[in-house]
Picture 1 (spheres, rainbow, N blue to C red):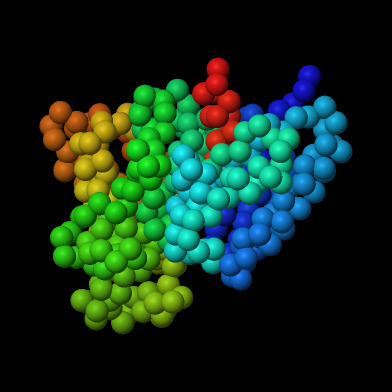
Picture 2 (cartoon, rainbow, N blue to C red):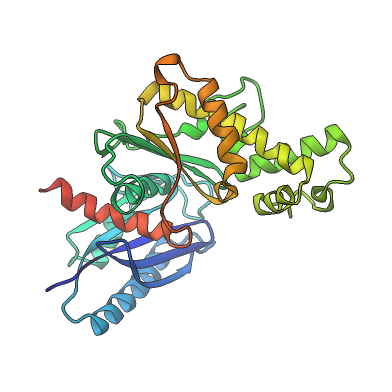
Length: 328
């Protein structure tokens, strides 16, 4: 029996992760290359193609009867409709990059080559391999350097008319509030991303003159959500309050999402969500507090069931199976 695989590529600001994934979401081969700072897209694609070709060759050696059906790509500002990465702020490639067309030239043998942004890829991965199997209406929030989201309605990912739907992290939470990385004020991302948690920590350190806090030993550059978590489980009061505040703001943002979409569930994925109840409990309480009565106690708030180490490439690879499903 022929075993089928897809290739997942996750393009990040410093590294590009590559994996060959089977239909059950198991990663058979992993590799990667640096995402360069030189901005030469042609050179980058050649290096990427060489790595993918080598990995595919190794798969064939270990599974002679296998078949690779296509490539799924997750990238910042990835546009599903046009197959382009557009003005991604954390990549050295400027302007509009036609990444799907470039890879089709390198791999004409693959029928399915598709692109979306990293949060959408995570949502598709959750739907095909993770906790959203069988769900037709859910939202994935990804918490990391920023706050991304992927929206699934009636079993399909929502792309909008131009391919960029789903920027829940850039809803206005507090008018005139913190400066967001996008340049606007008061966005959810400025409060609930890993960098937002750092800003909350330093505000609290200043407010309470928290010289006795574990967090006072770290510079802004060195402080991470993991450090805040480690301090919280040691009972550090400021670290605990960071999670309370972050959860409160996250719940407010999710309530807005629920009012627009009425999903069955919201999944949380990303570094800060590894804190478990420290963030889930205040987020759930805030969500319920800010919901209209018709939505209260209906919405599941769940951790992603994708493996954190492989989630990006597994989610990207799931794009291929979704493309195949559309043609059935």
